[in-house]
Image (cartoon, rainbow, N blue to C red; front, side):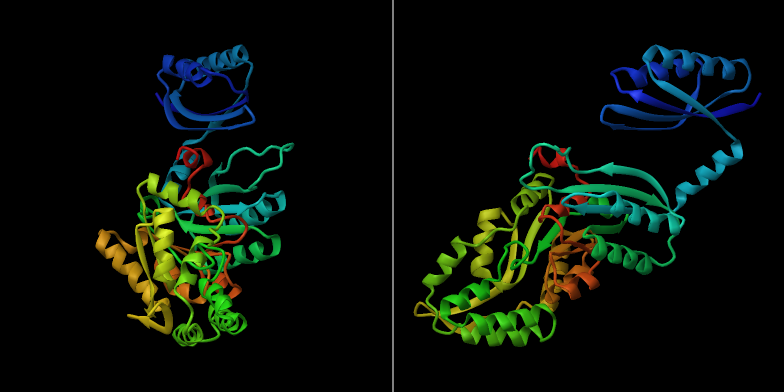
Length: 406
């Protein structure tokens, strides 16, 4: 005797014991569950179960009993017969490549989701699941920090990933939304190290510009800083020029600047959560160790690599101690930390905003350009520009309920 395959779709008001009641009916007929999944939106349930049962009296009876049980529970049941050929084709799809697309913004509009899913559809990729990662939003109470994120799990063969991601970048620019794309690999689920640029990433300022203002050379240094961040001049050259302009600045100014550093929105929430879940964190900065160590204590950062100011007789000499931490050096330190921790480079994350961050962003398993310059966004794997630094957590797949435990 053969078997029949059915897809049971349930919809209606969610209530305790509903899944238990339905599976009890299937158990009484010795049905085999082939697949099961459910979603709950505004206490309205959508439940799907695919099951196999022996052809004949059992097959007809189980459908009748399920319909009766659904009527008792006040829900709607719909059955779809599935052919063996159709089922086997579905099974064969499980070996296809899997990817994660994360959409982030201060709020999400239908147009943004429509354009993203249109690209996915055009590439003949299937969306297996859609999950909301941020908490529910009130329509009455104004949010102090509005943010919204959904995660799409997609499957299929993707021949040209760069063309696919460039389409997302176009949508991102046009519709003011962040779209991150990642392979759903073993490494994605086992990341262990997160490295941050400091200036304009962990803090909302460039420290060297702050020092320059105190030294009375603000405009000259800002012009050089901006040119370096845009990638117009070599970082090492710009660093030496700016350092010379700081010659004679009193050491006492450093403490005052450090105590007034503006921490980036979401930074503490991000780092507290990362530590709670066992990640290590590092600052890899073209800025200065004095301020890196201040942030290390304030935010509980594990490692700091930055430039050391040369100070003699209580004033800055305009020089520095040791090698200059430029883009190449940041990537070197990222690899060093991964090696010291005994992890694969794919298990690392790097976050930065400037041209001198691109090497480490592209070396890391997940590189994120954060509120970055256009050149950096266009050349990085992923970017966040619409919300705070804690947006990194949504790219890792964390839901607000996991974050709020911390």
